[in-house]
Length: 543
DNA sequence: ATAGGGTTAG
Image (tube, rainbow, N blue to C red):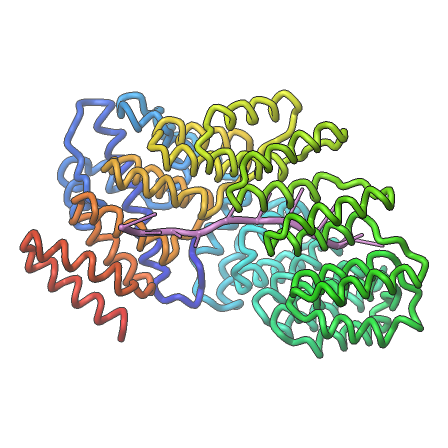
């Protein structure tokens, strides 16, 4: 939720959500007695005034109490009938350990000392599982994550497993805190018992490469044996994979040339290179790599051919794709679900829906079993073609076969329902997603927010923002732009203004188009005071 | 261990 502990506007972020929660609480309290008009605009002064006058019992509650308890209660039925809102469990609030820790970590100023101090009084049963969950939750915020990690290490009766160390190494690498990362690797090495593994070093190399520190990534490989990890084909492939993924096939190739005599290679060494050359549009070299592969007595396999096919698909060169498929058949190499997904998806994007569905048929005929990603693509292209009945059928098929939907599939379904203005259906998918324990992301919510802006369903909008909060989805600049634009277009100017304000207070700089749209609307409605305010905010954002 | 994941406002 809180994107950065360096962000001085951290407080305003949590305040925003607290006010939303107050809103729900007030709403609930209203429904248990008598329906009351609740202010529609999520504007702090309004709500506070409203709560103070009508519901002192709500405003007076401890904020720490309100957040977890409301998280258990806010439910979709509010959409239609607020009276159906589930009752608020006022007394029993069982916080799990992870919530307790999260709350402590979220309330800290950005320093490791503060984190350590805040945690000092806490007593709980630490386990590697719990520590991993906390780290996952804070995987974008290295200070609280590392503060907690360090604190946990010192607790008696607890010891970090190597996997937990690896996770921490990865978080530090992601934050580009490479000095601390290396210290941690050295610390792991000192523990002995093979704490540093190929897994650890793969993460190190990957993060260094991602930060553009190619030389350091390569040096990590050169010195890998000092940490007790062997310099073999596995670590070589890991390095080459890291370089290829971070856009440097050339370097991967150089490394390949340097070590191909001294380290016995395997099939994936070549496939990593082939994939790299395909990805960066050098099909001639990819082909040459395949020839070299054969000289080393390795047969190109489904991975090699799929990389080629993907490259041709990106060029929409389906004639070449068919050629490669023919070549595979000649060599006795069967395409698999990934191969079919790539082809079908590319055909769908090229608006060749019939041909895309032919691939589906062909795949079924060949006995290849579709997986979640395949179906996800299929749902996407059917939805894009407006074939909603077929989409429904596919989902039913998946359920029958026991294939779970993933985030992308749910996002697609929500997107389809939203663009067709099917409010109930869109929310139903969101609910189902939750029941399936499938974690939503920012893309899950964007179409929903757009839809409900369009429909002027302010309560649902609040519900969604709260839902995002509960799922640790941070609202980004793009989300605010969407809200401001959506509300502006549909005449909810006051709300649009307050989101604009919140956007600026959180440190996001509004785009010119967003700004001018809002100003134009305010001018049209001759709202001089609001216009001045928005202009001031914009100056502040640019300053 | 190497291969798949949707631009968008109008």
